[in-house]
Image (cartoon, rainbow, N blue to C red; front, side, top):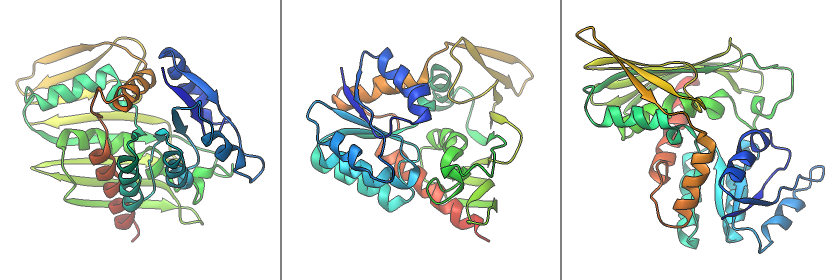
Length: 308
């Protein structure tokens, strides 16, 4: 059982997804303070408690690196919301710190922990559908752009940092290598923050993927993949994955169609269980240092490419 401290008791994602996930695993939330006005003192006081084993960090993105370092300094393991940080350098620094103090840091990326995602990754990695050639991912919805939401300014830093992981990382996990070329365009607000971004990532080896993320488009959350042997469709929202039974559709080049049945699952609960195993040194992370640094590098490259 892990005793958790939460940096930000008012966090929506904490209340909606992580609190139930902790409970499902028999973990305890010991403290979930909120800041006092602009004062972060309640967070630091929580880190100084000796009855907390791990910290969940859902703070605005620009605070992820600082408060993950502070939690590591206090001897806590850290599960940090995505994006882990806003730069490659900060992401590498966080993992170097964690390794130096013998603690676990993981980026809270839920998709790989769902049974359907696991089935899809296994299908591709097994070679049963040939080599991957082209993937597509989309994640968008019409946000109130006058709301003052932190994702619309430097604190959250835009659509790509917020949801790009869902449209890029699945294909990154299939490729298991750095991107060789990226291109992108963006629509930005007056603060220079991307409200919409669309782009392309060349993963090498004849495999590329496209993405579209937006705070200013109709609701969409889709994913598909073309391989040398099949067209693979993931019905419905691809992330975090359905609670009930679902499927992956495989249309092969000879015209035959296979339906792969997949169990449902609570991806957040599975992610928390996996975090506990990694922190206890009984499992290797499915999305660890190599993957987080690789993703940070791709996101950084896309921001540079879109600034034209």
